[in-house]
Length: 271
Image 1 (cartoon, rainbow, N blue to C red):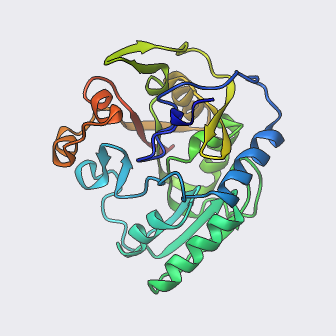
Image 2: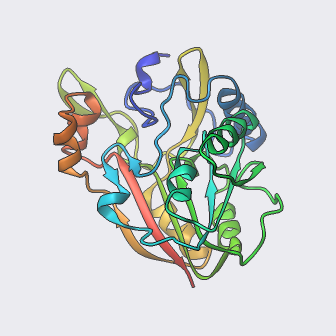
Image 3: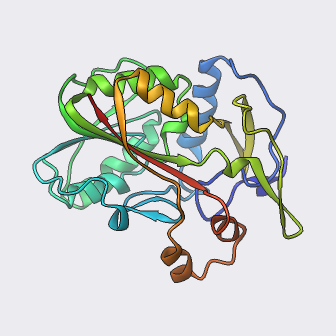
């Protein structure tokens, strides 16, 4: 598999060739084991994880203002990685920070990072799909920055997140836009390389490691949110031209961001 299948500038995976499709109903334990191993051993050394104030390559909280004032609010992050987004929220005066991540090594990094800044959070090492002791009806916000797509059970994960939130609590998440990984660059032309409707898990080579991914349709996210009792307040897929211009981005990612969405951001509220 071509190692260029992963963009070295971010975690916007899958712009190039992918490996052989495994199965849409792949054993979740295999997915967890493979992805946990990567984050425990490679972590952010190869993939530079996206973190707030950025939701993706070209969408920012500073421009979108999805959170607003979080002073005194309780926040839970799904897939905290090395703690950069927790830092962002802690510096904006959140009253409590919690986080769940599948990787013990990433949690260690996040803990050390926050402690170095005089911040703290309650960390839980667990797949996001599973019961792990997170309190119910407790949080004002649950958010996930480029992590929700790793779940092996989207509907189940959204239902769990709904239980964590207070009534009228807010869930905000970002992930690669589903159309992003359907298109590849062929000598300056963008062509469709896979079906938009294919949600099967497949392997992607990352440096000397491997990750397993599934590209879910936009309707899959929307319908799963509805089943979990959320109402969508905002859906963002438009590239921020100011960010593209300020970075003078001439990469494949920058080029595609001008003509199709590369990141999906949804803000939903618990009914």
